[in-house]
Structure formats: structure tokens, C-alpha cells
Image (tube, rainbow, N blue to C red; front, side, top):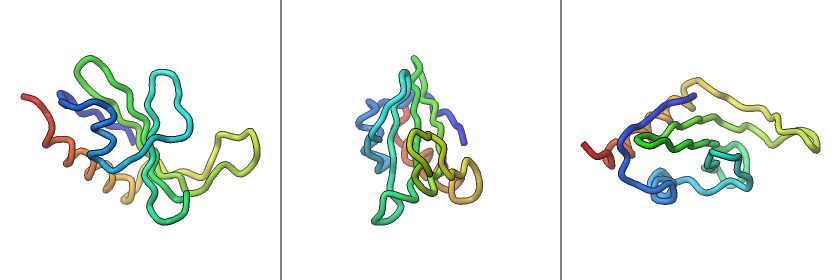
Length: 102
């Protein structure tokens, strides 16, 4: 699920703390990758990629159900929409809407 929020007056590190996420183990060029564990184990977890533009942040959210099945694979069992992902996206948008500048 992808969504955009404009005019956020926070750094990516502050934004990450505000929504309760932590840095992922890997980063892609031009994107900041963060995760939020749902339980005590590493999976399932929410995985969020953030791209910062001049006046907005673009969020790409999905739910990782499990880690990649075989070595060298980046594929996993993930949910990119549905009620759980939509609820998390709404939670993030609500938290960050309090930090928007007019």
C-alpha cells in the first residue's frame, strides 16, 4: 500500500520514532527502510519504505509474514493490502497528521 503525506515537520529519524518503527537491516538507495514487529518474534512485521521529496514523504507499506524462504532470495510472503495493512496505514497517517505544517 502506498500513500503520501505532505508538509511533515520532522526528520526521518523523528518520524520513525513517532510511529514506533526501527531501522531495517538493509537500505535501498533513495529509500529509508524501517520495520515494526507485531509480536515477540521477527515475523510477522510491518515493513515500510520511505522516500522523502522536497515537500512530502511517500510511504510504501506491507506486512512481511515470514522471512525469505531460501538463501539469496528477496521474495517473501507479504501482504500489500487488506484490513491489517490498511489499519496500520491509517494509524501512521493519523499520528503524522498532528505534525504537519500549514
